[in-house]
Amino acid sequence: MPLWPRLRRLYHEHEYARSEHDTTNEWLYPSRNCIWQQRLISKELLIFEVGTPRRTGVDFPALKGTKSRLGGMERTSEIGLPGLTEPEVMRHYVRLSQKNYAIDLGVYPLGSCTMKHNPRLNEKMARLPGFADIHPLQSENTVQGALELIDELADWICKLTGMPAVAMSPKAGAHGEMCGMMAIRAALDAKGADHKRRVLVPESAHGTNPATAVQCGFSIDSIPATDDGRVDMAALKAKLGDDVAGIMLTNPNTCGLFERDIIEIAELIHGVGGYFYCDGANFNALVGRVRPGDLGIDAMHLNLHKTFSTPHGGGGPGSGPTVLSDALSPYAPVPYVVKSNGTYRLVEDADSGDSFGRMTAFHGQMGMFTRALSYMLSHGSDGLKQATEDAVLNANYVQASLSDVMSPAFGGVCMHEALFDDSFLKGTGVETLDFAKAMIDEGYHPMTMYFPLVVHGAMLIEPTESESKAELDRFIDVMRGLALKAKSGEVDMFKQAPIYAPMRRLDETQAARKPVLRWRVPTTD
Ligand SMILES: *Cc1c(COP(=O)(O)O)cnc(C)c1O
Image (cartoon, rainbow, N blue to C red; front, side, top):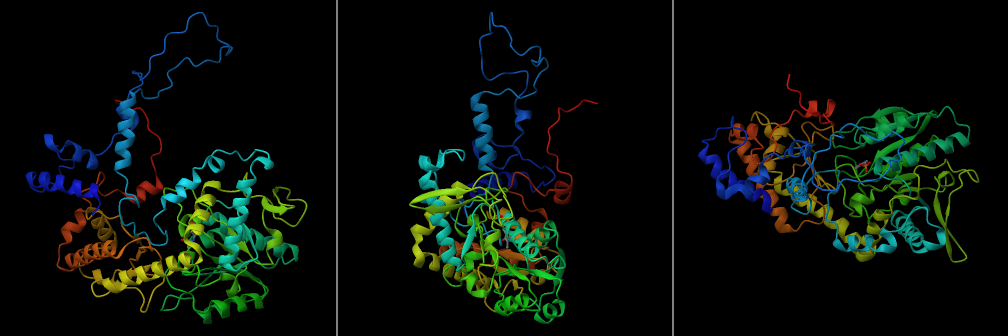
């Protein structure tokens, strides 16, 4: 168990015993020798509640004899910022940081998110001043190294995917989807194929896929999944028609399964003049083993922040380079890097060719590019392939080790993530949500839950290749323990969880629908 949850536990076992399981007493009083541990599990006030505008953390001498040049525009009322001393500010933010769960603290089994270790070498490279301290508006002859890095990364991506071209500027997976679908839209428009506006989206596709298609002006037609979690080929064939613009398919799909019929799917879609968008966020399961270019794919994004190890979470940063087939590459967005006579330059002009335009202000996420290339070069082709194989092996190890006490959603081997449904909890009174909350008390971040939607009470676990067998064994032990507890009727423990966390159960629906994003001065009435 990582250090902080263990400390929380030690603290709580001590305090909890004293309070005789008084769970109405939400926050327990610290005993003097436990103050430090208590900080880890206690709520942290907002900085506005810690400080007060009536105080200041710095002392400036009053200005004498200066004349304002603001022409009467200067603020006359209080700005309302809290005043704190430097140590108060430091402690506030460090305490907050200690409440975070992090991949650097323990297993982070969120399926679909590929939370894997980010080798510190990548960080070192990304912080080199020649990459970190340059500005996108610098003249090209002063950033030749950075442009070369983008070009070399593009080359690696094309080789790994077996595709002829890549657009580097998209800044997230979903942004890459948008890039691919805009290229498809541009290709259809160039052919005058206005009637092609229907996009097929299998139920096992990621939720961002239909959202992207709609955003690009297409309508969605859903394809059901078979009992073994893959595209229902008969249903797909029944939906084919001249108005089909293409398909958006996730592979491996959100059930963690390889779409066995993918080559036939590509042929069928091409047969009606459509394009094949593949969501490649899960490339971590394929690198070095399968080249999307060999499968008939026209466009696919990669999540550098998943497969190629750059840190992500909390909504960013991301990088979603999108590979394009020969049919789509003329429509790629600007800017892109070209090399001529030994010099690199950025092509910025969208009007000179068929490019659909620009997606971002500049060339993309330089820091992510640097980390990803550093990861690729330090692994080499054999290392990348092994990482893929280990990711799949680890997921299957987890699935096999839990299959007698939990219920795998589908039979057979999985790819990089193991999917369970909630049938093993049937009749226990414990639900997927309770199970996930109980994991927090055991010192683990919960797995992805209730996704994919095609599986009841889904629990999606992605261990990634960066976990050792010992680490996986500890995780498996905890999961087995919880499954057995649920079955032995310890419902209360699950319903109370999490106990060892700064926040207990939240009204998550309310928090998502009506988030309180602004602190207001409390009024007394
Ligand atoms: C993560 C993910 C996405 C979205 O990527 P973002 O970078 O979060 O926009 C899309 N599809 C799949 C399958 C994913 O796992």
